[in-house]
Amino acid sequence: MEPPKQIWRVSPQDGTVRQALVRWAADANWTFGPDQWELNFDIPIQAPAEFEADSFQEATQALSQAVAMSESPIRPCFYGNRVLRMVPFTRSCNRSPATQS
Picture 1 (tube, rainbow, N blue to C red):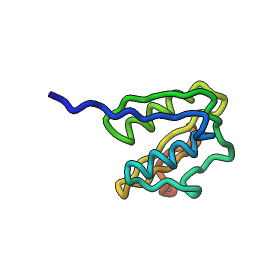
Picture 2 (cartoon, rainbow, N blue to C red):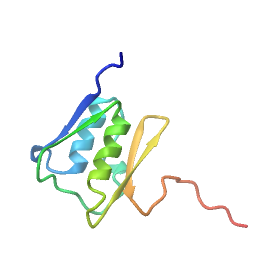
Picture 3 (cartoon, one colour):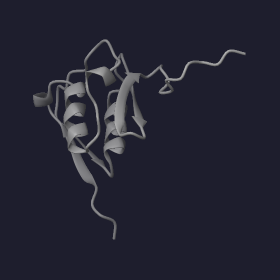
Picture 4 (cartoon, rainbow, N blue to C red):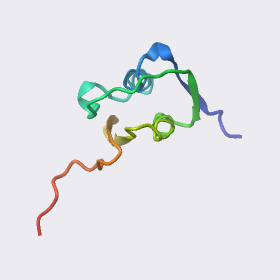
């Protein structure tokens, strides 16, 4: 029998998606701070929502998809050192410079 999925919640008390992710990351022992939010805007949370997920990464993906229809969709980038970075959807998660040919 599979263990039950965890419920990840956001609410207007969080204020913004960024603040909700700060809380989630702390709960999951991930790093996510001001330097990892690479967007020039915040996304307000106007209604409570719940995401049933097996992991922090899965919940963050679900939250990102929930705001994907907004004017400014976002992309989560997960790294092996347990750092989350949020970027505009149009930007790649790859931070290495492009190689020149």
